[in-house]
Length: 342
Image 1 (cartoon, rainbow, N blue to C red):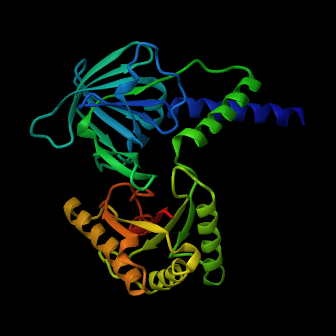
Image 2: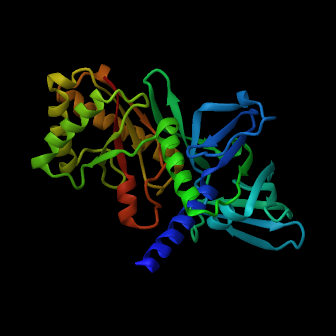
Image 3: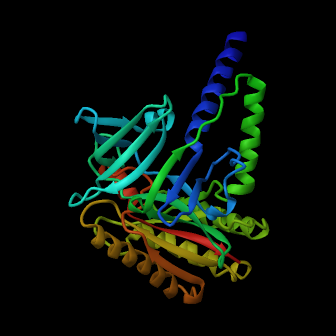
């Protein structure tokens, strides 16, 4: 029993360490504003101007699994994986874009051991072992009109600097537990991005789906959740198609029936279309908009007023899984339906 407790304590410690290292990002943009990560847990320095931080945008993912660069010291190509990026790097300064080479940057990399690297031809990749360049970071932006947080993205070319802020590691187990509890409480109170209830057209159970969805919607309606939705309805699409397939049709039929119930008459929704990364980025953006519009048109045919629905396409941005297999790609071909407010 004692050995189990020791093992459990070690696990808690290292989970805490990983959380501390990975959560505390500060992204400086070229417009002189700064964005904190969603899970930022550190106090700001007293000499920092609070008004430079945008409280309505939070970073959720840098979308970087690997960085490749040519060092000015030895003119050799080096790689930094995500784990090393989070635990060994303190700062990345974007000096300039490399002229004539897409998605390449001149950088100054500062490490925790106080060494620095001036680099040329630096590139960021979304996935390790995959040469897909990372062009955007994922963020949450607060939609004041709809009183909810919505996922968006920012071009990496707009970044001036990324800070990986660290703090001293807590050694005592009870302090670690207390810190985790405080962090979790702060996350729930301040971040506004809570765990979502997911219903998907690919695996829903028709017998229980309508009642489960209605219960979740009524719970949301009565929760007074100041940050908006905790429900996602995900409609999947066939490759290179914006047509509603048979599974999606059955899924949307049940959704429209629930939305037409008197108790939910005031609910409004945001439809957000996405694609996998196959093909041209501009084409995918257009396809994602068509997918969102297809869902919108289908719901309108089921007597859901157009005044209750807004739609937008995001292209291949914000995949829910890396596009490294056909199955993962099929899950990224989707429209997500978010309740906004009642």
